[in-house]
Image 1 (cartoon, helix red, strand yellow):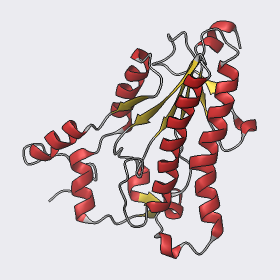
Image 2: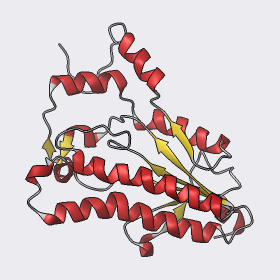
Image 3: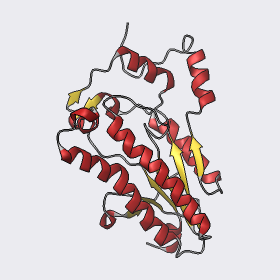
Image 4: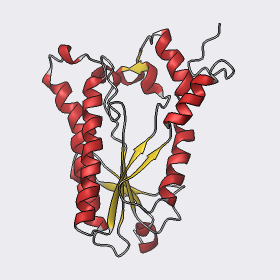
Length: 226
């Protein structure tokens, strides 16, 4: 890779250092500072939606923590090592999720446990980077509720999940498609210069406004008609 492409690279984590790789992103292509983003996704919905008291198979716990926690830690540490070798330093961003804000939902609490740990890890990483006067900074991305196939399908899309009407109503009120959220988060990353930044899409004020105006804003992400 030539120097220009390398300088404009976003790095994305995986569950093992040998899978660490970079790829260009259209929104960040003009950025002169390398950015690492870990999305922490990769586990099938049917492996996630399990109450804690029903976790009889250890592989589910191991796989969940490997993808959402171990992968984030390894990817972040590798990114820091590479970025500290560059004059411009760089930014490491890890993605929060359910559990990062202490929300608890039966069936999703193992996932929430891993995401709460990601929040602590990223805040601690930012603190340690500051203490060592590193040129690398760390921050968190909070995308809120994104409507994807993950929302309604399990088993790699082969099995439909029948969501309760209350859950659908909640998602229709505060949910958004990934491309809308991504553009906002990327612009936030491009303008950010601070360590330990927290870039939030669904702020408390925005969520409150959506609930207040839900009766006037008809949104249906599930393709159903009354």
